[in-house]
Amino acid sequence: MSDDFEREGSFGGPSARSLQAALHALAMGHTDGAVLHLRRLLGSDPTHAEGHALLSRVLLAQNRLFAAEHEAKAALSIEPELINGHLAMAYVLLGNRKLSHSRQAFERVLASEPESVHAVLGLASLARLQGKREDEQRELLRALQLDGESEETLVALGNWHLVGGQLDEATRYAERAKDLVADDAEVLVLLGHLALRRGNVEEARDHALWAVQQGAMNESALRLMASIQARQSLLLGLWWRFSVWIQARGDKGQISILISGWLLFTITRLVSEDLGTPTLAGAAEYVWLAICVYSWVGPGLFARAIQKELERVRLKGDF
Image 1: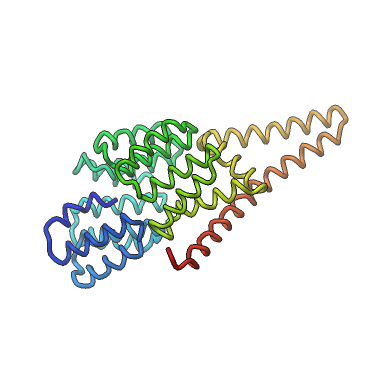
Image 2: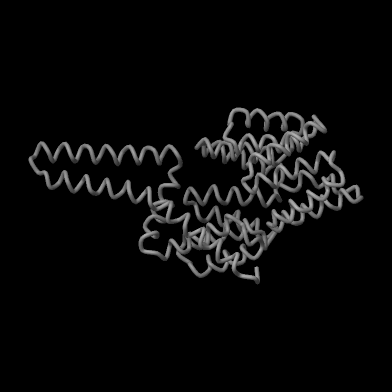
């Protein structure tokens, strides 16, 4: 996120120093600190369009969509042609799932600045939300071609291969990102997920704890910690393995699996009724019902595990 704003910070002056302080806090995963620096900047200079645009991106990272949209609009009202303002608004539209408008906004940014890595990464995120894995990979490779040392792109490519179960390729991108920024939280989380997928639970935990130290409220790090807990739990462990397996099939694959499961259950019930074996029909019905209930309860239990990790981090003063 930060490299789009670095040119602004190179001119010196109080506003630029505040902007750089916000970027530094953001790089460390301290979004609250970034918001604080940007609020101070805008308190002294309310017409700082770049400050509003960056604040929009930070607020979006905190899932504060309404506030992020307000700041993006403020940036564009001050400077209508501001590239970072349009980029911030494109991400707000993406966050609000206004996908067609988001695509238009990202393409508008690229028309003015063809080498905007974050606009291309935005299109990759858009493709991921639409379940278009091939399009997502194409955009990620395009972003990597624009900037071969973008750790954000390398991590995104690593995650793309991780979802597809291509662990060696995912590791290759993760190691490249680690060579650039060894203590980046998202890099550590990716390495942790790779370790967990290979069954190296303690190694995954080490990466998760290291990532949390970079930013105690980092959602992806806490999700990794919850995944580790789920992996070791008998009940949640089954859901975790099922989730990993079905996620690798993509949105279309997931829908196909669910439809196939329902058809299999229906056919089994009809055949058992024709054969006069009600016990088999009853067993099939209970199995299908158990799968549906487990799929409904599992994510809630997983979310509760994440919440427990959040509370544990809040209580630890050394973070």
